[in-house]
Amino acid sequence: MKFDELKNQLLARIDNDDLLEVKKVNDLIRLHELDEKCDEVIDRDGVSITIENGSQKFIKSHPSMNEKMKINAQKIALEKSIKFKLKTTPPPASATTVEGNPKRGSLI
Image (cartoon, rainbow, N blue to C red; front, side, top):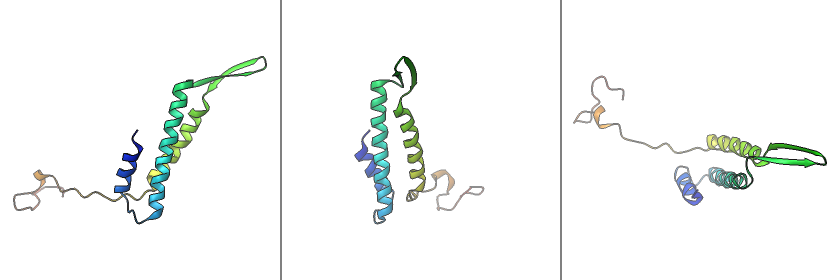
């Protein structure tokens, strides 16, 4: 993933004068980077690992799987807390008349 591009897109959607919001974006990017590193380790080792303890041998999920779940929960919470600017989009052309007034029965 191109984290610099993602960071620039997110920074463009917030108030850059609000240092807390900028920090949240930086933290979110860091979580994405950590998530990608977990993916690399899981791809290398597999989703499960074998634990040997003396004569005992058992299989359990890769520790990075649990970390990914924690990271994902943190990303979701952080994304919800970021105050993104609302994009203003013009109404669809079919909802207005030539004069710019809403058509009768239009929901705008």
